Length: 579
Ligand code: SF4
Ligand code: SF4
Image (cartoon, rainbow, N blue to C red):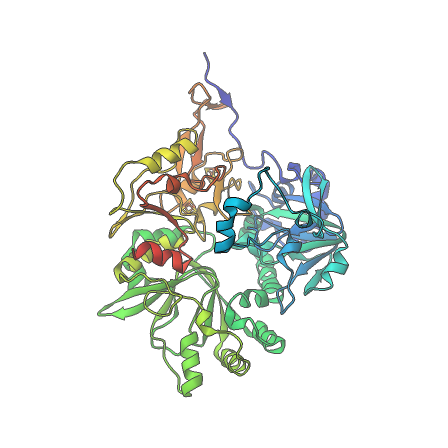
């Protein structure tokens, strides 16, 4: 009997334009028309490899999508896997510049109100005896959002989009503009919601297509465009995500936007800095990392992290000790500038800031920060104590890990990347393996981790996917099979498009991805129909995405020993590592 066989999937087996939501298949003639328009016309096709020409990238990684009046194209907070170029029509972008900003209700989201003590207690006799009761006035009737079916996908749209959006701060983007590229390239969430205003036609490009264009765009046109677009459209909204800038007056904000400097450290496109960090931890702490602000120097501005992570360290005998880390949205240098404003004498930094792996940061120059602090003091605006940092020994919002060595190890081994780091407290764990069995049951009898990994003090960090802030496993995946779930932000592998190339497994510095031979239901290994070699695919923890109640491992532990920790959440980190 011959082995079961299928053809090994390849990149572009299914062009983007054949996926649901597309208008029609992209043809060579369509691509030729696009190549004559800017910005494609400004990109030199000679810079592309013969095996990966610009023409083919557009043909396979791009699609034309039509939107009707009011359709939501992307929503603030969703994770971005693609960028859009406006071929015709207009879109409206919700801006965060001042108030009122777009409420969650018109983005199709709802706030979950937590029940108070009385409401929780009275559920015992007030709950309905019939299932699934809803209040009539809370269902659909108040919503300005409707749904419609278009091109094999369901769209959410806002009725009378222009009239509704006129009440909020928005910007109109017209034919020839790009949007969404920042989230797609930064492996981050969307910073704004975009609606189609009237009928529009957009070119949507998958992130791996943009990545390949950027790699080979020798004159850097697209890169320059992206930096300019960030300054023009998203910088103010980004700055306002921290309390310091919440109430910044528009005139000052405009000057800040004009003068902010962009700084990039490490290579966005390469997993090497992350691997070096883990393989050579001394290198990281002995000054091998790029220094952003040196200890003792007066800061030339505050540094705000855009993407990636930064280490805060202090001189310690002949070396340095790590005392904290910064995640996206957090800032450094404010205390020193504030002390200078109060004492009128420059105050040098007590700590040093360096980049871990790849980092994007903005620097707001000191004179503008001083002006902002004076403005905030005079209006009683932002509470500076709300400016959170993950520093071990200062401030009520800081990570409270009382053991500097443990904190340092977490940073050195880059576990601070985790948005869902698995931690097992070995003082509670009885080695019963209920967690592994639960994982196995949730994944068709295939456990996605083993109870093995580095041990820091009493904590084991098993080799399970951390669901990183900056998932470098995605960098080289040719098909985009490993991707960030657009709603939850979890890192997932799509079995339909994984070609088994193992790039992700070799890039993941945490050994969290396993390549497995795949089988049919009788246990026969499935082979490539052409080469007859076994087909492999990447597997890893998917946070039990298809299970109710979240990760089975955590729910199964009878001894309260296993946790999933978001290392960007100071209170969770403190709770788990200071028990
Ligand atoms: S597979 Fe590895 S690099 Fe990717 S998110 Fe998981 S731990 Fe991070
Ligand atoms: S093995 Fe990894 S990198 Fe290769 S296609 Fe599958 S998910 Fe992508």
